Length: 389
Length: 243
Ligand SMILES: Nc1ncnc2c1ncn2[C@@H]1O[C@H](COP(=O)(O)OP(=O)(O)OP(=O)(O)O)[C@@H](O)[C@H]1O
Ligand SMILES: [Mg+2]
Image (cartoon, rainbow over all chains, first blue to last red; front, side):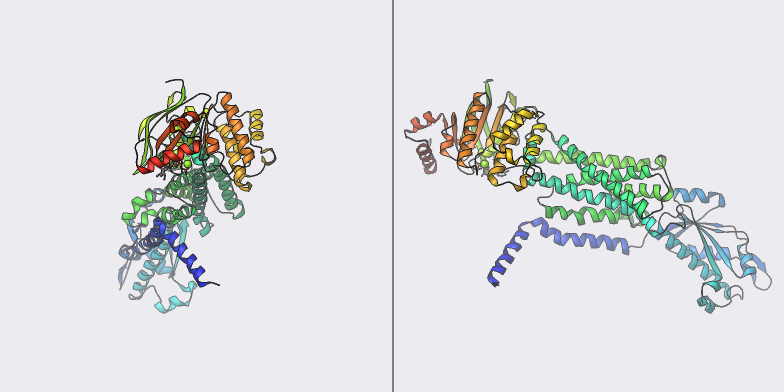
């Protein structure tokens, strides 16, 4: 062992890294970027979730205590919650509101809600959830349960209802409250994997071909063959298109594997058409290919390609509506979501897989993806033009 | 003049402060072998890249096969061999040659065999380029430049790393191609190669210090060999003397 040789190597390695200013900058910038995005998304109070309430509860008048209106009490509790934005609805509007997403859930309190409770000492809540986003569904269910529990507890003071708060600890069976949840989309047989599957698929489809395309195109430049290609009659548009199709073929194979595996091996539940899923994932894969080709123009070596992961890929995943619903992100981050190609694929995949929607409903997302592919393609061809002649 | 295959006028290419090509005027006729001779960094590669249209000139103009460069269409009749070998490492020798032939729209099976035989790669056509030695890569590169039967060949130091025997074969083949009307522009450092050219441009710092046939350059300088003439020219230039 020679300490001097080791230090000589150490010095050389440090010099090499330092020469690559971008790498040094990235070592500092990338963690800050990714951490800040995470903090913004985790920390900021999310926008309230719209919850519809159909309150038909007539309440009940009793001697001695006077009138009791349990429905109104629950409603008042819910209005106080800052996680929810309560909208009062009539029964006829429920399905329409759930379909267009302007209510993410609806709590229905029937005419005889109070009366039944006083009679049975047991309340059953009819909660209908939009159902395409598991975290949102959980929030709503928890908030509604809590509001109902507090309303019932406040009844205890009047001598009715809660036979005593202590009894609530005895176990589920003795709780005077049960929540009957029905899902507008998806359903009970859908587990968490079913809900995250669309996102998984989208991220995989884009990420891997992005790297493939980026490195392949970069290699063309680093091994000098780009110069040779540029000296043939082929123009930039042809070269980029050739790449797009060649790598696109691998993207197609990969898309098939992803779909086959999720649907037949993991047995993911999905509602809409498989062909439509294939189309969406394929488009997203092509976005990945074109993004890779474009990004390679900004990379001098393979290491710099890897740097695109925290810069281009992770923000896509965080901001593209993958795990945080865009409507619940802080207002000032929302415009970024719409700039992320993966957002449109996520939305379309969820609409198809969880809501069973068809082309007629999701075509705007498809159109945007096509547009993005076109724009990326033109930019890639333009970027090449800058390099050689 | 229109009967020149290649012609430049007051051609300049500056990279910021570096004048890589600094006012080059020259022309090459059909069937001629023109040699670009000059030390490292004198601008040979830059001049070739300008002629083939890979770079846009800072000023001046280039005519190639009657077209003003850059022009894509002309390139199907032009073969280019880069200084550092530019090949697809994963593909075999034959696949590389076929690829470049196809890119120029002319694959001809018998011609391809002829090219492979010329560079003496018959035994290695199925080898991936990744497994080739430096000289074998150089031969593959030349084959790729010839693959589409070009009318003009731009060869940037084609014989670097090639053994003397094959180098000699290359040059007799260049001569044979010229005999068939192919025009060649060849860059080199080596004097014995310079003497095999029909005409020469001696480059230094982006300029031609001397231009003409081997005889002309020798007699103007009054030296017995080309090498002496070049050394003399280079010395004059470094002394700062006008020429
Ligand atoms: N893309 C570029 N950017 C900046 N400078 C460049 C570029 N290409 C060439 N140069 C500079 O232009 C000058 C001429 O370079 P060129 O490659 O043409 O020389 P050459 O005669 O081919 O040398 P060699 O015999 O070493 O191949 C050199 O100083 C080189 O550093
Ligand atoms: Mg050179």
